Length: 268
Ligand code: ATR
Image (tube, rainbow, N blue to C red):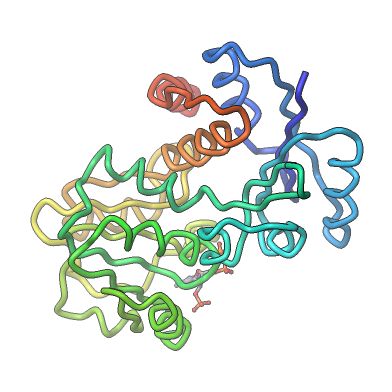
């Protein structure tokens, strides 16, 4: 039986073992997938030990994605762009690091919206935002505006990615509207609302929160109150990033829809 795990701190709440167990059952793969809590100051030793003990691959979550990036012997192009790694596996030349968050986000988004030609607003300029930008730009939006509480971080990020991206501060959004607004800040974790100008949502616009929880997140509530036609949480992104990791590890593409439906029902 091939061994996989998610490594984080904290990790007790992780739904990854349930998701990967469902993918394995669906595709007839024999795997074991655990959740492992690494010590805050000891990720590198911990993950090295995991592979030394026969682990074939792992997911890495908060707060270790940047350290996983440093640990990998080889990086995929999208991991390099993101500056963070959420998926590791062993190959003949060592440990490969990839980032499946961006593609996971876009696959979930395309359940609700066709991104080509759209005006996209990405809120936040931390790790979660950085992981999303390359994949969003690949979908050929008309424009990708990255807005952050600290404007300089958004401006630097946009300059690094180039293309149709631009960076600004939150007050600079006054008077502008978008077809899709994505929350990649950590404000929801603190149950805080974002200091956003009103009128951000064009007719029919979608609000997407990378966070999820029981019921609507604070950002989803805020977006609905400001006129978003639809508000969606990040549970689908979680399932899609996992499916991409599973495909890389096992060479088979799982069907995500039934797994997402099951997970959604278990949250209700
Ligand atoms: P992550 O890896 O989850 O992205 P991070 O790198 O710490 O975490 O980034 C957190 C992001 O959320 C940042 O963009 C942060 O804005 P600043 O760069 O200005 O700090 C944003 N953020 C967190 N709390 C926020 C709040 N209450 N209002 C607005 N933005 C917030």
